[in-house]
Length: 433
Image (cartoon, rainbow, N blue to C red; front, side):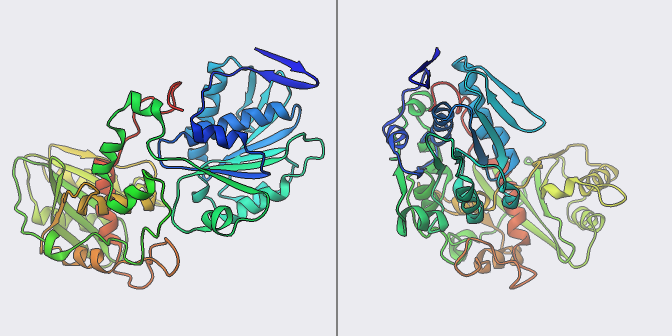
């Protein structure tokens, strides 16, 4: 039910916040953050705060953002619209301009992806809120701070939610070198009783899927130097390099990285949760068709079939001609392969999650080793031993050695499609806050 009191709008919403969410909403800091592990209700807290500030500032404009448009549309905006619909809060959504207007207060919410932060300059804001802040460049936050200047606003506030990502700019600004006017609420792990009631083994499954460091960051919400220098720090030649035999009853899993020089791919098989990398194909200045020829020379037939994985960009056609995956499909068809399928994402997975999954297969937080490499895969082994991050960053160094990163990328694409942790059905539903 909506109404007014002393010039303020009142609106009842079905929402019982968790302790950390309640502390976040009570904070009166001009700039405040909610830091927590996955499943701690960050998106719910973000959207509830946006609704609250829209009612505290009737007729004014706020901004709700996320690092990219897909993240904004699929997570942030979807969560807000779900809350409004369930609580029968009247609104209009202009999809062309990506602007939502509350019918009873006239308040406006601009939905914006902040990856192109220079476009954020302009209109004065009463408030702004950002989802997944650790994936956002600091310049975007600074620009939005400058826009928080609506003289008619009753409550000016900039806020954000995030999962820790090491000692980055978010950590420095909100925790290490916090300035006056900033406050951060840190959620406790396993706090979300609503999630655990619906999916009791949610965190236990992640413990089996994540490597120990990634588990501490993503599930326990700790700030730590997760990467150091080596990217695939969990790899041990003595433990993970083992002879791997081809099994005729299992399909071949062919994963490609569409680089011209070298053109790289790996061939693997999975037995349950365990992955065996059988072969690598590394060709200098080769085309996709030439990569197919080499694959067929090694595996002219395989009755159990082939599953193809790889870079999302391989699905797009060149200036003229077929896409990489169309070429592969046609080559395998001509060779007589009857069982061929493709498991390719519409967009490449985030590098951090893909790398974390490779390390988790090498050695999970529960101590399981589920990834083994044939000694024939010499270049892949070099990748796992030598690929590093650029100094003082979480950016993989692809410039130091042009032969590095391509095979490990291909492996990561395969693992992401087969073994990434899936969000439980209903994670943004009514009871999962």
